[in-house]
Length: 315
Ligand code: UDP
Ligand code: MG
Image (cartoon, rainbow, N blue to C red):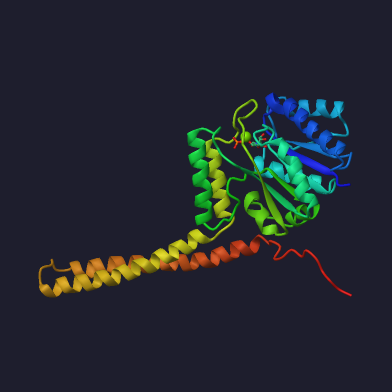
């Protein structure tokens, strides 16, 4: 029987922690009684340097349900992505399959069962995908949608409307732990792992209590981090811009020369305007070219795994 670990990053979540713990314990008990997961499955709370009573509450819950509720206390606040990573890497050696979910219960815990079913069908990664965003504010909806589009244009492939609510098998976690990069963008890395994947759909709810720990500032930082740690496309764009401007300068050259021979220009204008455009283009192109090498170096230093072997048939 497979041992499930539900990993929950928590930052200043004292209002929701008990509710969350109760809901997840309910899910575990239900799945255990249905014989879908092992009886020693557990919830792993990761306290991301909370300033309130979150950790005390996790300790209380652990004292009450020592087998079912476990906790990891990070020494300081490292942010959602790293807190979740810490939890997943810790859980890796203790479980056969993991599900990550936010503490605020915005994601529907009822679909965890569906995820487990898909896991039993042989899927290694199952993404929780939001159907609609009607409970989010208009602002959050627009910014979040813009975020996915922009990321895609910038060359970071991620699953649309999927946050960090997902199931990962032990072997997916093992491959994930090979990604040693510091600038970590989980939603971009998970699709690189490979294996068979699937999605489950749910309606995203309001936060049970407390407020969002992801203000616009953190969201922009996440977007920028995602792009800059995944793709060198911005550099390529500079190179392209350089080429375009050089081409435009050639068109401008024709125009300027014609004007010059028609005789109605100020002296010096033709050579000035041509130099400005042409040199501008050449400079951009050169920066882009240097950028390509910097970009390559950047990709190299990440030391990402180059492949992930699923099966070997021999002898
Ligand atoms: N979180 C965290 N560290 C942080 C910020 C948030 O561990 O620095 C956790 C938070 O406790 C929650 C999850 O990340 O479990 C998602 O945060 P939130 O619900 O505030 O984001 P939103 O749903 O508004 O995007
Ligand atoms: Mg939330």
